[in-house]
Image (tube, rainbow, N blue to C red):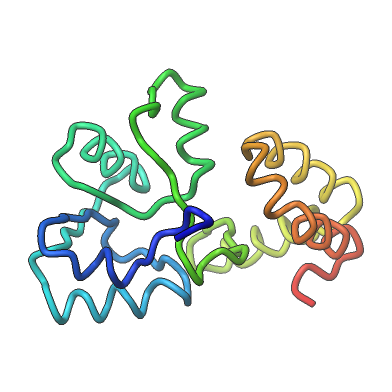
Length: 168
């Protein structure tokens, strides 16, 4: 569109484009329903992979032109570039209707140890120092465009986190 955002339903209906996604991954409330409808309507236009690196191999497939598109966070491309994996031939575009911040988190096993670890992590990160550490480690990974787009929402998140109220 005029703002550079992709019309995902139109992309998924395009008969010559082949997509690749990570199997079992949720791409968020705004995207998952489109993927489910596309899988039902045209199951051969999308391939699902179970990589052990949370999707890095899917981006390599895209780089090698084995697929035409995938869905990934733009900051992942920046991280790949920082580790010497050039992604300059890839173009990251926002998806219409899916430009709100998506929560992410830390995973632990569903055991007593995992619950205790999550509570400890949450407690440590729900302090002014914890929120500052999160901000300092994440914000530099965002491009200037992403910082401009999401800056106010992220500022509000870090303020709530510092007060011990990350979800309100």
